[in-house]
Image (tube, rainbow, N blue to C red; front, side, top):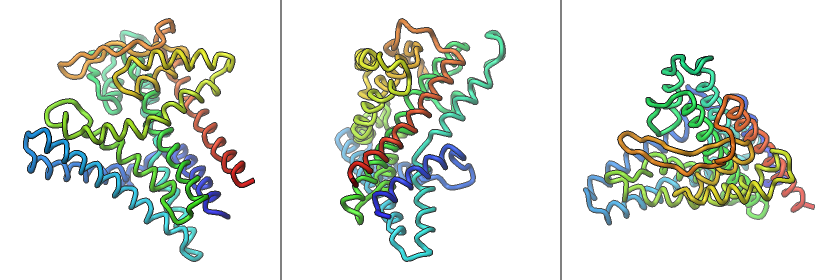
Length: 339
């Protein structure tokens, strides 16, 4: 078996493992380790830079370089286990499969969104505190003032936006790594690239805020995350309509998503939500509250119905079908290259 073929099998195994068990609670997750390093490095940089914008920007760039490069090297070192003589090679396969699964969040995202839906009362006027609490675990917005319609919209938005960040972007970089192995077996592969992306995503989630020192400290991480997510996001825009019939509306949906999503300040978040809005037929966007700050997000799919239980579940089901399509496409690309 060639290294490229091994890469594809590892990705399939990781996707299955992620769908089956998600993120085990009792096992140390790589993202937790990345988060620990970010906190330690941030403390050192802030002690040195104080409130000086230029120093904070430089320090943020250094944090990004250390974390992303370090994560890639750690993944690359683990990949070398594959080339140990048998029976140790199978231990390498198991370790790499678990490592790749740790970069995917399909099961955890689905479970988190479904937990919010299941906590909603049967009637609109019921107790919403449980649903609000569970939603607060997966979104950054203020949830205390949300009614049932607001909770459903927030659940749909996080399911569509985080599908790109948590599933398709890492899956894309895994695929690039598997293809690289076909031409450079000893080079960085699926795990190295997936963990490098995960490091940039973790940097953005922890430092990518426009408040206080983070306005400068988090710039490098946020820009890198935007860059690494740019192409996977556009590929989601192009492929999601293929798993959401009718296919005759492919061009119309892609154009509408680009039109709506381009108005969002983020180069990726608005577009990822917009393509789901137009493929599923659900209205997203509007007013969000972050503490004392109110943000008016662009309305996506303005002519579509507002979020409901059924529509949020359709968002999750569409992501599941699209993940299967992407993995199938990777296998077909490799077969075409081999033959």
